[in-house]
Length: 231
Ligand code: ADE
Image (cartoon, rainbow, N blue to C red; front, side, top):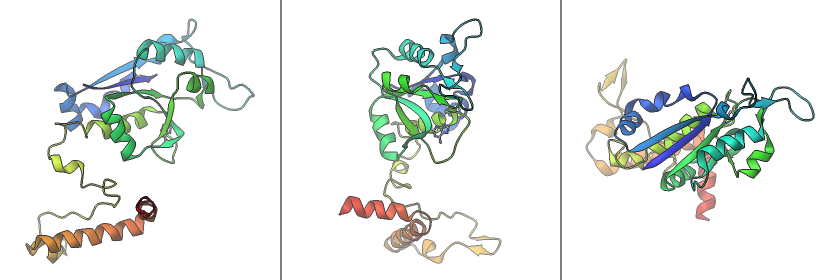
């Protein structure tokens, strides 16, 4: 079974949205498993401290290497799953990496808080830093939810329509074409005639043109990347 283990100071944030809808149904059906571990259980002293002031000075607090290492060892000793650290300075997450994580049987996901995590535990426990985008969240939990959601929806038996896993954005390196449904006339905006003409080849061509146009407008970097992999 695909299994996510999340190390966090806020286990109450889980399963959160992952407990609803498709991922929630799959969770209750035992298609995947979610385990949360409270990092603070390995905190030090009467106050179970997990952080301290940064060496060299500066603002904020840094998560201690010894505390986080103890939490990781308690949760994941002799565990072959990839160990991810959610961090805005990580490698950008891609659909390709999500597919690898799905195939790999699960993930151990560490959620950072404070200004950062002591560099030595990142190295000593071989944590792979992963970012979900060029913006800063107040902690790794929401990033972890996003990552796990992207994995779970690809597990066999989670998505309604089998085909939906493939044709979408990024799978084909193009953004998705625009969608329409009833009514035909919404506030004077009508469904493009081509979609109602019944000619499936023509419809497929129109959708491809639209996908190309949107990708050119919004994500020209995707077209450039695609050209590079084909060259
Ligand atoms: N933690 C804070 N910001 C983040 C981001 N953009 N991606 C992953 N983890 C984060």
